[in-house]
Each structure stands twice: as structure tokens, then as C-alpha cells.
Image 1: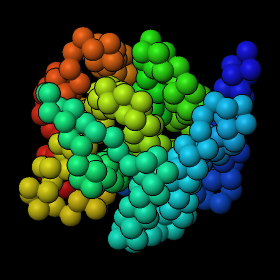
Image 2: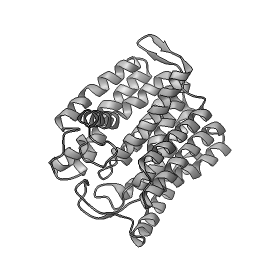
Image 3: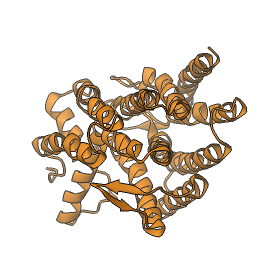
Image 4: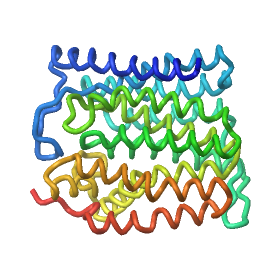
Length: 338
């Protein structure tokens, strides 16, 4: 009962804080004005993701006090998330050059890996990858890519927040059925912290997440996936499967834009989900479709991988195959018509 009350408190804290941030954004004219690169048509306050950050970070000390997690996880995950949130908050209120943002991203990734002990050995189709420097290099770029792709994918109402809620709730269930109950607390805390924000962000959104929230979610989800990998390498594959929609859309789009010679750091709206939202004329069908894919396709595959019915790398390949097809169908990375 104590944990349930704790999680519900995080939900209502996020809910109330988002409402306060919306009033603050309106008063300070922190408004996202639609332009040629936007996927929305109505001026909307932004920066509501700060509520997620505050609710989650306030919950970490309580997890430590009640021995629900380790102090290394609190310092590592909380510290990395705070760094990214501050960078995003400053960018939401002004502008930070891309090179300085990227430097901050790498510093937060290094901080996180230092406290989590690096990255464990990976097993891919019977082969063990256990060369520590290579694994740390992989983990650093993985974290930086995940936090940036989460920012890229936060472009329509409810998408980034719903993705985070479903991924963390499903992983909490997987931890429970796999005997790693203790690892479920932080994903649940994040799910409930995001849940309060979803009430305001669900289509049609009354406030947007902003860079502070999207970057924070990306680095935190990456941190939780590495924490899970230390308990069992299989759990890392489960996280990759559950985040598949975002990983495939963002990576496929970036690859095509790089191949074309585009300035990838510039804003655009050539992701598959953005083309889909324009095709259907609304955000809700796309956000609902992503939720459906997560629950009906990706979640069962992740559970089968967790139960060792399917090898992790094979599970990722099976999960991603139709997602790549959807990326092609919805023109991910196509040249935008001016």
C-alpha cells in the first residue's frame, strides 16, 4: 500500500505541476508558434515536461529512504537526468548552440555510466561482447542517441508521453514475471510521473513537453535499460524492443537525411509519424496507432524474450521488421516539399 500511495502521489504532483507550468508559460509567452516545420496548427504553451522531471527527481530520495533502489542509481540516474533537463530548460527559454548541447549530452552519459558501473557484457547469437572500453563507447553513444531521438520524436500531441508510459509499465510487468521485482520501482515511478503530464498533453494537447522533458525521458529510459542489462542482458533487448517505434523512425529518418547531405541538426518534419499525422489530418490516430503497436506487437515479443522463448537479438529483428516497413510506407526521411 505504501508503494501505491507513493506512485499516486507522483502522478498528482506531475498533474498539478503541469497545470502550474502551463499558466507560467502563458504568462511568460513561452508559446510554440506554428511554422512551416511544425506538426501543429494552434499556438500552444511548451515546457510542461519540467513537471515530469520534478515529480521523478522528488521521488528518488524516497526510493532510497525506503530501500527501493540503490544510492548509485539515484545519483547516477538523477544526476544525468537533471543535467539534460537543465540544458533543455535553457534551450526552451532561449537558445543553446548545438555543439554545447551535444557536449552536455555526452557529459551526462559519462556521468551516468560512471555511477552505473559502465555497461555489462552483451550476448549476440551465442557470441559474448565483453571488451569493456568498446562497451562503454557503445553505451555512451547509445545514451546520447536515445535522448536526442526522443527529442526528435516529440513532435505531435501525446506521442512521447504515451510511449514512455507504455514502455515503463510493460517493463515493470516483465521485471515482475522475470523475478526482478526490485527493478520495477523506478520504471513505475517514471510511468506515474509522466502519467500526470499525459492528462494535459493528450490530443488535443494543452501544453507541450519541451526539450527539458523529452531529453530527460530519453536519458532516463536509457539509464533504466542499462540498469536492467546489469541484472540480466536479456532485459536490455526487451527495452530496445519496447522503444522500437521511436528507434526505427528516428534512425531511419536520420540515415536518409545524412545520405542526402541534409543539415541534420536543423528542425524538420520528415519523420514517418509527422507524415502520417499530416496524411490523417489529426494527431490522435497516429498516437493511438503507436500505442496499439506497442501493446499488441512489441510488448508480447518483449515478454517472450524475457522468458527466453526467443533470443534477444532475434526478438529485436522480428520486432523491427514491420516497423521498418511502416517507416518506408509513411515516407520517413523523404525530402520535404517547400
